[in-house]
Length: 285
Ligand code: PDD
Image 1: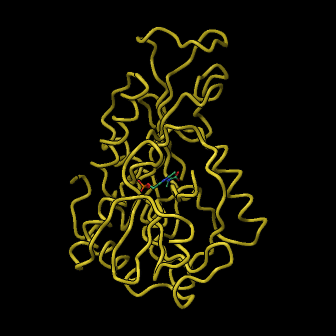
Image 2 (image 1 turned 90 degrees about the vertical axis):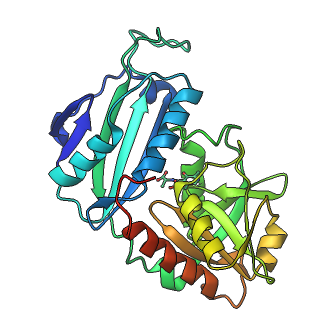
């Protein structure tokens, strides 16, 4: 992956330079998207663009680009078959450090790069993920996809140190989401429970298509928060994200979910999700 995008230009990665005064660097005053690429096609680009524009709007960052065209050119120029495109927009560069941001006409910093990664063949899909829970100490606007990822990074390091795969975060004893995935459970009576869209979670692009597939499989969907105890008692648990797609969870805080193996319905949702996104033109929403 040699070609990256920076402020309108496609350049070799060694030539892409960003100012030390960039607000993305100094204040995490930036938003981003991660779009999966399967078979050389961008998955759900339209929905990623819609969310990016919403994030920008919520923070009053004025940035315009043909986001889909940028992502598509990076896939083509880097000959990417499977992996992701990362796209970031910061408010831009200021003359000196100041909490207040510069005038609205300041040019944003827009960059993007492609990264190869195996998405379809992930050993976790057959072995399942082991999760621990921790308090959600992030800010209260988790619906905006900002680059303030320090807490999520700390939690991923904590998971690694604990010998598990990831962390589910909780507020008021209710599970919000994973460090970089949405969290879901299926109850013993076949109800799929997924946190409602509010400021506590990121509105996952994968979650939208996952819910559509689950409903078409006949599952009833309840969009509400669930407790750690409810998750431990569930028949199945899983996460959704652009890079993990749909991934089964088999253990929470040392407690086995169901029979301790990836759930059957989760497996079906993963398969139908993959078929659905593969059979669809890349820019369709
Ligand atoms: N993360 N919740 C959080 C906190 C996330 O960071 C992500 C995505 C999701 C799932 O959203 P989507 O289905 O749109 O990918 C939920 C990306 C993959 C990342 O930061 O790498």
